[in-house]
Image (cartoon, rainbow, N blue to C red; front, top):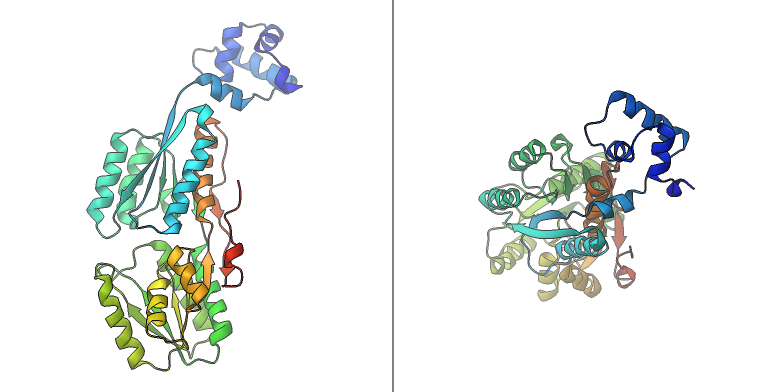
Length: 354
């Protein structure tokens, strides 16, 4: 068995010292070219496969990964990411792996800068990151690259930043999927409503931006005559003023029966519809946050698209662990399922056990 091959056996067969074999196996310096070739030849002949787990345990050092995500209230999407991160850490305790969650405000660019500056000051071994804008995020990731600190992107895929890996949906295809599902029940409509939340006229994440591109792409290809009416609920606006914005819109557009929110806040519209008893209007949204799930069960939301946030958090830590601690290659792009939930199946939607 390969795992029973001893360093002593390799040294004797190669005609070198045990210390030399140890340096070769752990890629340490101070090995002559001749000795290196002898050891590597013997390793090939003996089909030696190192026990990476045992080696990592024997190394006996600690690792701290930092996870930077947006500040949030009690919302299941981000909470599930955190739970996934901590579960993965719990399963790697023997390897002295730890994680620290750090939060930044998506409404203020300086908050992102302050948070990543603090992160860098703590000398992380790896970083899990929900990115801000491309420009701001690049400032951070350039510093990570300079320090050779691997990082994983969640939520928004920005390949130009050269992350170690990405976990999240294919947001363009997700947007197309949402349009297709919506139009299964709205195909006879002349107009639909698109609810957006913006800061300074921009949506807060690249993921939502790409979803909208995919959504509009599908609509242009398949329903070019259906008008898409936008309603903006500004992120920096007081929540209590949203009802006024929605009341004015629906009063002015009684023809609207179907809406879509390409973010996790469909419940804002869903709750308004329930309060005003507008039972002839349906909305489609994203993510199994508690308020969305409640509106789905009450009937004001027709569909939710889920994306396994718990697994994203878990696998991000696991990927850093395999790359940094076990020195293994990892897959660079990991797209999550695009799953459709209704009130008939939401109670059967559980995070997959890992």
